Length: 103
Length: 514
Ligand SMILES: Cc1cc2nc3c(=O)[nH]c(=O)nc-3n(C[C@H](O)[C@H](O)[C@H](O)COP(=O)(O)OP(=O)(O)OC[C@H]3O[C@@H](n4cnc5c(N)ncnc54)[C@H](O)[C@@H]3O)c2cc1C
Image (cartoon, rainbow over the protein chains, first blue to last red):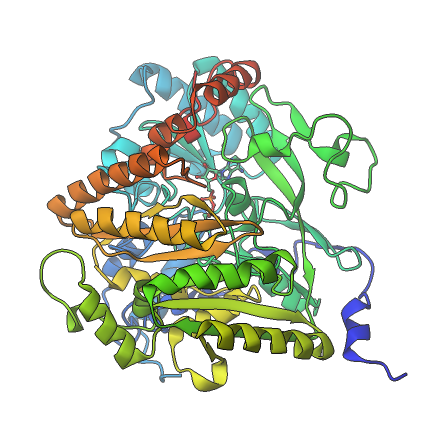
């Protein structure tokens, strides 16, 4: 009998995996501002849910304030999620961005 | 630096509070003890129809280890200062990251975000409170592990531990999240560290595979409660099926809910459809499609049925929209697909797949049914605008007559206050979570007042009929707890007295306090 997809379904991968801190994304540390943008902001702001925020020359203080305070339905983000240094990076990225191409 | 502060814990003088804060800073480091009001802002952003002040924290602390939590609790016991633990803190529409009572210190565990282990053979994971679903997703992708988890709609920013302790739900076959958790580590108020189930035993390697252990199974008392701080959670992962076949079935009439439920229940109980099926009303579907309310109705009060009919016609939306999926091999799914087709045809439903839809609602639902994080459901908040949301979530039997009755009751009460019925039924094994998003404009005082009164009337009218909430927001915790009767509450109080005699862990959460 040939090896069907069902076999793979039930086959297993490898032994217990224990994660070290050095690991990239899944370590829970943001790699860079772009990653934060992609994995937090973009889910709404590039999906027709929230307004587009890139390419609008939004003021850095305004962006920062909206992230920390939230705005209407937009949730607030705490320093424990995006710390001050990381937020500074996102603010720079968004405020100096050119409009993204529509996907 | 001067600190601006307004809220204090109930009954605690400013001087005492300052002393406690100083001790907390010694344990955690100054930067992990936040008292400045501007920096506390994200802990006070709520969507509930009550004033922010009612849920303003006095401080926020961000420990990064179990040992730190243990030391913190010693200080809080000494000063009798209450603390409100959160994990990823995105309990949006249920209280967000704000404490249940004004003045409590928020203990934010988001920095404790290690994925401690994943066992690809047994398909289990052990995670800390700060792990987000996105992080777990990235982990599984990076390691190329063919494992899926179930997540709630705000998956990208929320996390498995916080969701599970509030007994949240998702949309894969593992959608009832508490059911698929296995083993917890809990720091008790007296700083003891309890591992539930098999985890209590030294050197046990079965903590994540056998839930019950020996003697009473304690896990349940750490969900929707305030008996301990959960610092680790085991969860079961699902092997990615070789064939995943998501679909939607649209129905033309609101009253069709009766036959939908009758037709789907046997399939769900027998696990032909193994996942938490959603039956979404047109007005849940519309904002996520997206459709603008103002394009169809700008008058006062709830949107009329006639406008909803126009929306449905223009955008190919059902009065009810069923979302479910088949998970298996091509062979088993081919066989079960015939059953789905027959059921749809027999009940007058139209099957919709990705190939014949352009709706964004369909996209995010299909992703959620395989545990792929997104935030598509936030489209709901463009419906009324203004960021007001409170979930009204009664439990229903999975019987058609019951669902229709609940829907009508809710729709009438909502309309009385000028709100739309934005509801869905999430099908458990034999129950349904009837979830209604009471959407209102929180910048409008009148609407906010009405939303509060409306929730109150919904709650009490449903309770009179014997319908209870599966979960509730922090502002109504006391009232919801009261609907469950006095004996349960008295037992809960006795437990509280025994486990947390100084009442320092989230007093008031789910109505439990001394
Ligand atoms: C558009 C939208 C859609 C939603 N859809 C869903 C959905 O499909 N399913 C669903 O379940 N929810 C849904 N929600 C509600 C909510 O956002 C999610 O349930 C979310 O997962 C909860 O937030 P969290 O995971 O960050 O948990 P947290 O906010 O961290 O925790 C929730 C609560 O549990 C308690 N708690 C947290 N951590 C601990 C701990 N370590 N020890 C003791 N107690 C603790 C606290 O009381 C806390 O307030 C939705 C919300 C929105 C806005």
